[in-house]
Image (cartoon, rainbow, N blue to C red; front, side):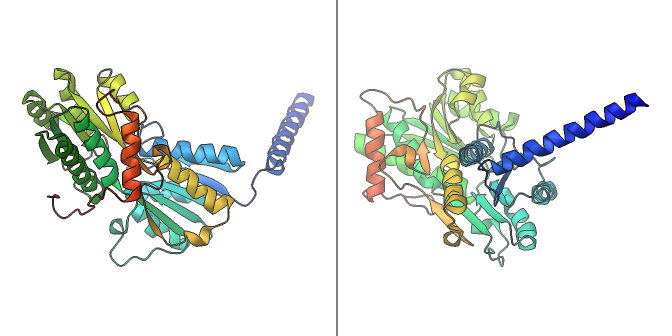
Length: 360
């Protein structure tokens, strides 16, 4: 009987200690008004892409500003499970929900209106992703990206670095992927014109966001036919381009985030020449700063911002090419990249964002 009593007493002391520790944490300068949760789409926080960049941006910001943070991963790639994961975060008291990727549009439509006191930050979710008659409520903010600028810079850099036979492999022909592709073509063309170089570009959509044996076979024909480098844009479609490139010492261009680490580790050192990046990290970090820290939700409520180049300094922008870019001395250098960014920022270079037809 005494043993049971002492065990119960120990348990009660442990509960008291945990409660005290939690309360001390909440009172030790921690923000009591906001708790931030990020929900992943169909990937994971180690995907070297959308989820990881968003997770790292949100986590870093929350740690620096003493805001409680968590992330939720849906049990499957479905609207029902994304909705369930989001609702679970809300039930646990998280009142700022960060969502990366167009797949969250149905979740927003289902959940946002029912939770007017929760703020939703949706990255890369455009008006076209929602139902035609849906109007964003005042507790939702969306950011989309000027992919055509990132694609342009990647194409421009590739041709300046000496590649003459290039390819673009898109996943599905959704607007974001099309803008990447059409921007890439414009950048290649601009660099070829400047250097008086004749180039060749192969262009195709896979109609899916993942690689498979059939797509790899097509990539084999490209690379074996002389294609030197392929810009693979759209989820994990890059795997097929990389599998084919590895057979002939070919090169690739990554997308969304700096993919050099994952591609080079899996398919061969130096395979990734550059990546056309969306600034998921800075846009997550900046949105949380303005919305939570500076209390400027009114400036974001119900809006869809189109983020692009805002500075002559490359790393400050919402679209970039990767820090790991293989800049060549005398070909396309880091200083050349900075000069290119400055010209785009100044309006001296204009990139067509039309997705209806291939730019002339």
